[in-house]
Length: 434
Image (cartoon, rainbow, N blue to C red):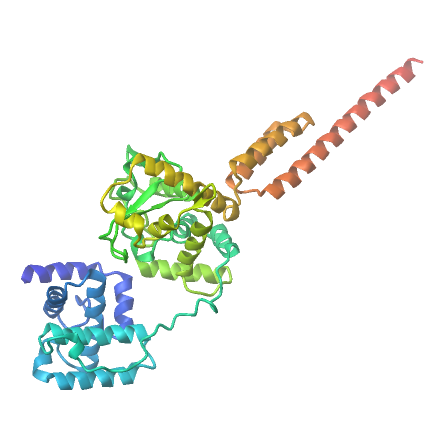
């Protein structure tokens, strides 16, 4: 037990901002070395062990129940291991009083977490033989989230503006959240080693991605993986370039290097997205970025006319046909080729509509136009700079056409002026000889 207490003390010294905010929300004092506010570390460990042993809870549910019970115990001034002494009837009465007192101020889903944690604790401490035997207390348990129909839609223009104003870390954050659809809780856990080994190389402390769109695998053990299945996402090519740059600029890169160091918790991601939404004049839930990813994948994840709904759901971390098959067999080289080909349309759509970049076919046409323009006298270096700006998205196709037309006109004018000067000079020389 002493060794476990020391472990918790060490963990508390590294307590994240998310945990601090969660304590504050539930109204639990964040005293030194206390994660959930029971009053001492030993009580906390015993509560968590009891919950885990009796209910076999997963980590996220275990955390929620621990916080919920702590909130109730703190408010009602009851120690968790004194429930039997207090008695079931008094606990039920105290629970109903608590719900009536806070049902106007606490969100229904959090109130429901607290109610379920108390009910489950009564079962864990053997006050009741089944959680169904706890007094039924009626209260609103529905979410207060905006209705999907009335909620403001997050448009492509908003994402594009966020990319334009964001720094390199913010662009990568948007790439993970709005393009790949990864939940915020997952981002701080992802490391270089989660990429497919064939998609990158590590050499002299630097990383180089060998695939334009690398596969990033999300282990089922990561907190925030709600379906608890191993799945993968495919990274957009521009985000891959930016990630390689920021990783190599920061430190020696290893397989254990985290992909997101600046935003190391779900809360830091939430705060940053809220700030970026405000900067582009949008008001809504940060989770709308994941909905945006859903729409982009749904419209563009295809091979020819064939769309794959199962693949989209799998890449968003949902259970389905592919997730069931994938748990029993690894991804084959043929699978990688097929899925990358299907992702090509997604990559192209994001490149053109978000980053303002141009597709390979359109770039070839632009190069052909540049060759013609050079014959009209446009400077080759100027054309090269324009093509590069078009390729990386610093210039749109419309801007390119406009500037190219202007450059040709200017070159033709100079050619005409030069020819006129030559003819005039020849005329004057001939006239002088006469």
